[in-house]
Amino acid sequence: MADHDVVEDKKRDPRRAAFSSFVGTTIEWYDYYIFGTAAVLVLNDQFFPTLNPFAATMASFATFSVAFVARPLGGAIFGHFGDRISRKKMLVWSIVAMGLSTLVVGLLPNYEAIGIWAPILLVSCRFVQGIAVGGEWGGAVLMALEHAPAHKRAFYASWPQCGVPAGIVLSSGTFFFVQLMPEASMHDWGWRIPFLLSVVLIAVGLYIRLNVTESPDFLEVKESGEESKIPALDIVRSHKKSLVIGMLSTAAPNIVFYLATVFLLSYGPKVGIDRSLIFVSLIIAASVQVVSMPYIATFADRYSGRTILLGGSVVVAITAFPIFALFNTGTVWGVMLSVFIALPIVHATAYGAVSSFIAELFPAPVRFSGSALSYQLGGIITSAPVPLLATLLYERFHTSSAVALYVVAAAAVTFIFVWMAPRGKASDASDHPQRVVEPSVT
Image 1 (cartoon, rainbow, N blue to C red):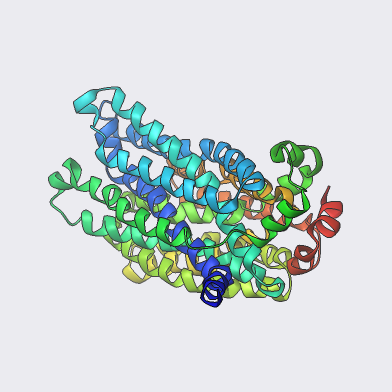
Image 2: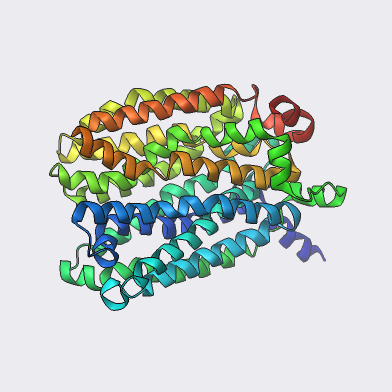
């Protein structure tokens, strides 16, 4: 019996829960971002060969954006059952859905083989990826946050966030080596390798996730009988302001992130910068961000997520033009410094506390749904259009300054809506979510 208790204590360890969330989100975001990288490198040729190069690139980016439309649906579905049945079970299903859809992309015949069915199936797989990641973020954040002690909730909730740069390291690293293949081989079959490798990662993620206990906060809700019958409906009825604040708190970090990790891969070669240099810069910068993000989150525990996000918005605004100026030098150090500033400094500052900030806007009975819907609906507005709008702005004005202004505008939006959030430490609100957070934001 004593041995059983020791095992259960280990499963309830907040570090174990946070690590499980980190590994799972790393795998999910790896799967998610290899699609974005492939969209730049090969998907336009493989699945849209009848279009001219610019139109094919735009069609490929549009396919990339399809997932953002699916993500709120995934947030609603996984959030509903995560608030009513189990946080843990939903995370297991999300990683299975992501893994299977990614594997299918790696096995899809191209346009030359099956014609119009190739892009249709590609879009379908991307849609399933969107549903999976729509449930992943909210569940992973809550499993880390709700296992954590009150004074470290922002710190532990940032661990799933670290899965984002870690996924970038894996995806960029994989494609860096794949693109070293002869170009014909890479375009013929090499691009499929990163998608097929996902199977191994999914097996690892499942094993880790199955060895973590259910969220303590969720178990308390079940024991008290306070489950919401229709969480999404309760969010719309009683937590509208929280929903909008959560959605638009992500504008600044999301736009910076997708510019750095997707748009620059397309923009760089247009201004004479080799993609290999961009990949190496992304790998280095994202590796550092895995450490810088939880460090920044510790300040949210000390002060508040609101304070940190307000500061992050200012940082995003004042660095938008310098980041492009450095990148446009075309030098090795200019490009590397540009990406380094964008990810482990700027994005980490604006994004590190987002997870705990959004989660603590909602009481425990609807926290999964509220977090997931806020983050994923915000993604449609702030993330999905980034590669498309940035490409259109550059094509229209022929200067990166137009794209930098886009970043400044996003920073202003985030600042305004985060300013509307409740004041005080997130950890204070999390102790009594229904009594403290709910009345102040609805």
